[in-house]
Length: 194
Image 1: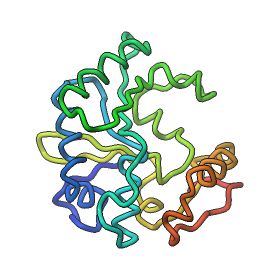
Image 2: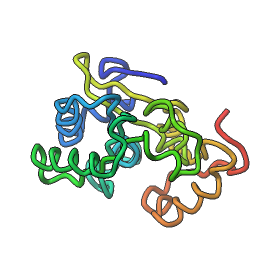
Image 3: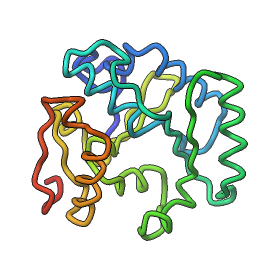
Image 4: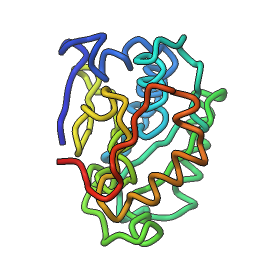
């Protein structure tokens, strides 16, 4: 996992982009206040604002469909536990489309071997630009990026593994990513990130 704080290259770093998004920072703080183990906000909640900023679009031009909360606790790996956390988050920030998933229960659904942590789960997400998460800490914003942030910040779509190439291509087409962000480039889907 690679980590960065707001003070490291703010503005051009992912942490700097996040820091400029008041609603996202508030969501990170709300999540931190719950004290969930290994809890992060990831996927489109970070990817979309980053691609908007890098494309010169106004904040919120391409809002994510939801705010993905990922956490890890094998003792509470149930849909009911996730729903209870979503309800708590709706109470803290009712206007956000929260989506909570304990990654301890997601490996089987995704066709992967059991995950060891949230960072391990994130590493298996389909594309490197989405396989990123952030959380609020006493020192500021921490980034989890098992494949790094270069593809996200370089507007490159690349599968996290050759096996995820077709999934990534289907997701990109279904979500209209290259239409929404014309500067995106698609890396070959038959190889993974170096």
